[in-house]
Image 1 (cartoon, rainbow, N blue to C red):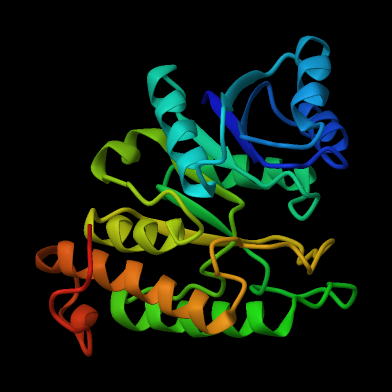
Image 2 (image 1 turned 60 degrees about the vertical axis):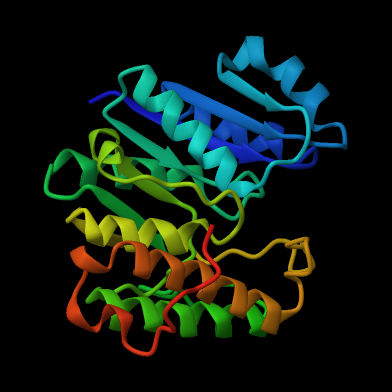
Amino acid sequence: MRTLVAIPVFNEQGYVRGVLERVREFAQHILVIDDGSTDNTGDVLTHLQRPLDFDLIRHPTNHGYGRSLLDAFAFAQGRGFDWIITMDCDEQHEPAAIPRFLEDAARNDLDLISGSRYLTLDEDADSPPPDRRAINHRITAEINERLGLTLTDGFCGFKAHRVSSLSEIRLTETGYAFPMQLWVQSVAAGLRIGEIPVRLIYNDASRSFGGGLDVPEVRLSHYRQIMHCELERCADRLPAQALDGVSAGCRCQ
């Protein structure tokens, strides 16, 4: 089972070395996507690439979190990997959890294994910013109601994807709303979905989403718009309740 660990990076000069050194303990194949970093991240990656032996994609400018994942998926498909594990580079995803993803993948009964920070909570778990937790809770509940899922965390980026299943979906979202499109298309394609617990860690509650999305109401509206557009596109392959209350003619592109 050939597995690629893919790590999108944007302005992570303070974390990237430690994260990559830890990931190397658990992964044979690593891909880093530097999404147009403007700090010293690029230089750090240049110095680390030879000793840590990872593949690197560089975006000349920032294209968005979703675009980095799309590039990672295309890389995994082109190089014949069986699974791709995606994780963040801000020390909020523990590399030590990688073997758990591999263990579940090896059982061969799921196509998408998603980490959940809320499936089980340790006493020492961090507290997320209230607006982020509230939006996650509301959107996750709506995803479950519309798609017949039982998710506890709709936004965790720590995931394992069966690479062959990626050919069943057509993802285009380049920003932070990427999970909205992923969940809808995965259900429409009949992919088998499961969750495993990962630690809830928040190192920097002040991180910006950019593009006006730091305003919670704007962010919630944006996520819903992307989800509703995808529900419309996939309506003929979704549960009957998927479009309840969704206005026809979303401003989809």
